[in-house]
Image 1 (cartoon, rainbow, N blue to C red):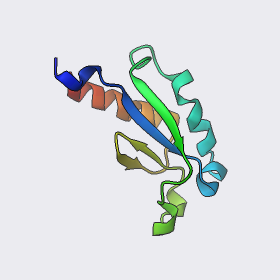
Image 2: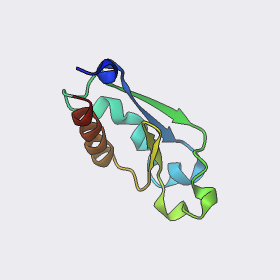
Image 3: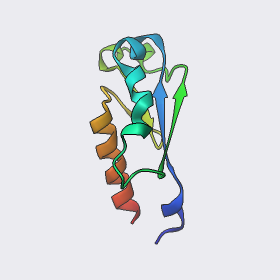
Image 4: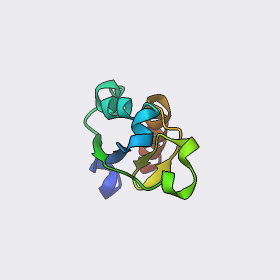
Length: 91
């Protein structure tokens, strides 16, 4: 098993105005909705703004960073799918 396989994956949820209005605040509840295979392996945190709307991408809100990679139009199922793919790559 690779050394980083035990390191939790980090999800940063934008809590800026546009993302919050586009239901981004619901993404902060991600940890409570993780399937058993991801529980304890993901760390969710909020960020005041991820600066994505300022790049003419406001229509793609809400935004999250999954291990530093930005996801637009983020949903809990979409983020979970990305996390599962990342964990599969690690193992």
